[in-house]
Length: 370
Image (cartoon, rainbow, N blue to C red):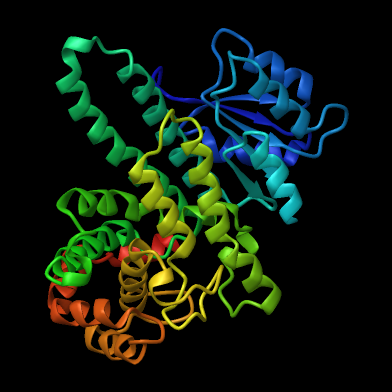
């Protein structure tokens, strides 16, 4: 079909090229390059690809150099580059992301993961392109533009959150549920003197929009760790904990493109970086405690843990609402802000109604684990 997006596959191994082609051919147009020079030639052509899957280890010009040249050229700098690599060291990941790559897929390649990553990065590219076009709207249409930008902001945040969920595909509706949990809890806490000045209606709306990015840093965690069905080793858990750092860094990178601070991104950074902190200081990454933990992150902690408890995971079945509540009560004053937890308990039935309304079907759960 003429409206299919085009994916450029760059890999010097015929077996990898054949596999990627077979995975993508039904949904996308494909172009193939077996070396860096050919990749640049195809990328710089008039009909440039919409996304590039780029092998790192190639003879001659390696993937890093190809990426560097693509990002240095105005014609190709905005094409999403996803690295294909067997390299999983932190320094390798950092180097690739610093060059401008949006993601990486570890080898051996998993077809479902390839399809999810390609789909979500193309969604993000469309959102960015639309945002750029919206910025060119005439000034007399500013009210209409503001409305559309607000809608686009929601799309971008949800798409980025969906990208993280595609790395850890446990529950298809996790993003929607946690958004609504955060909003419900924030609105309840407005009744408390300690929170009413901070939790204005405007800020609650921003918290709702920022919530999908709480796990965006998972795009930086290797598949071998993120998708492991068994218990993580201590070393693997340390790597997993870095998703909070990766998340903040990813949002900071976007923030640098703005001419002034943006409260939505500020809240998103707080949530991504600190939602694994605990009230008693036993969390990560900074072992913050009590009020040193941002309010946004404390809200997200309750929403995220509740949803994890009621959802199916590779290591456990879903708990009942009652069981989840009993477990969370045990975390009052240790894991959770005690005032926030009391507010949560007062409206826990509303959380349950959200969970019921947006529960994952058996098909969702099964496809997530294929």
